[in-house]
Image (cartoon, rainbow, N blue to C red):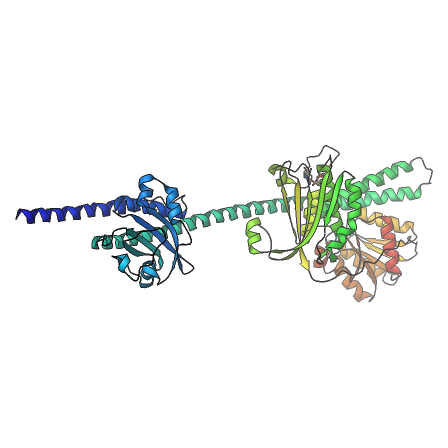
Length: 587
Ligand SMILES: Nc1ncnc2c1ncn2[C@@H]1O[C@H](COP(=O)(O)OP(=O)(O)OP(=O)(O)O)[C@@H](O)[C@H]1O
Ligand SMILES: [Mg+2]
């Protein structure tokens, strides 16, 4: 009786201890740190918790990778006692320890989706030896993901055969079920955190890019508006100054003043052109251009520009690189960038220009926060100069932003580059740091094709004429100037202040007007509309369009460049006279 009682008591006590072990092992599992730890560390921590509560000698986790069970982490009792994590790494973290599904005890646990218990390994044909390990008994339990898919196996082993009991089997099944959920949660959590971080980064970049683009757009609108009015004023100033000069004798003492006016207004015209370029309102003549050719052509000029202390290297891509662009504008970009590089290298250095072909992919767009997918030609301009800090870098494309002394820089160089690149649907990036030099990369949409051979322009002196011209122009200064200059050269000039006025005058003088010079953008009726009515009144009547707006707006008004005669504003008197003569002579 007493013996029965003491056996029952021992058995109950044993069960009680098992229960306590189970609770402790599960509670160690539930308090595992899941955040800010890498997966191998998290797995090892889980094994530690298990070993501290269970009488096992070694345990390991093998996870499935590409259909193979690969050793992920392992721990032995010695490691735990000696605190030798390094030896645990040595013993277990060997990726050479692998098993196929269905192979050995572990492989069977995965294949059968059920716990496998090898009570006496030396006598069990399913058991596959592990190098440097003495294993008497072994249990492999599949670890299930939340959806039921097998993630891997947990193995526990002991040197003694028949060491593990039914309780081990029952408990480890429960433990592995919980562990599988935990591992799934861990992976989900980390994936989500990474994804959230990535998205926040992406969003921040997009927002910054959008803000920058909006700011540039607003400044561009303002600059464009001012520049457009300025353009007309400067056309008039330059024109009258030219008229003054023409009327003066060569030795007139006042001649110097009128020439100064011309020189200054030319500088003002250049500035205005810069603003128009920035606000993408410059009249351009896009055509297929071989970028490599342009770079090679401006190389000589750039060499002279940057001086002897700076070495210029050009890395031209073997492939032919064509873009739709205005040649003059591309040259302007190179000159502006090289000038800046020169200023950034007062004691000499290296300037490298390279060309290449690049694809803008979705990854590129995500990384940069801008871009439209497609094939691009990329030109990079890199210097070894003083570089810039982030604050400067953020502002460099704004018009009039300069860090140079008064009188040294206007702050328009990069604004012009930005405007030109945007006008051609391209992108520009800059990477730079103080003392680290600067690298600009320009992306322009690539096209297939070849440039037409450039036609060299011969210089023709303007001849006078006696024909009757109609000038329709709403800007008083421009109209009066153009009329004055043409009258000077013998033409008879009729003037109209808007589209409706132009039509009235044309109808009254339809048989004598040899050429109508029409501003594209005018009140009442635009240039194209006037042209269309004129053609009805007198089919074949000659028309010359003029505008200070971009090809864009002109196209929208229905005047396609190339199809009609066109002269941009501002124009010099010589340009106007030559153009009028050419059109009248049908050249
Ligand atoms: N390669 C470069 N290295 C270092 N800083 C640069 C470089 N390029 C531009 N910057 C900085 O950007 C500013 C703006 O350049 P941007 O070309 O627009 O104007 P600028 O050179 O100052 O004047 P401008 O070109 O009108 O004569 C410069 O003043 C300079 O601070
Ligand atoms: Mg500059």
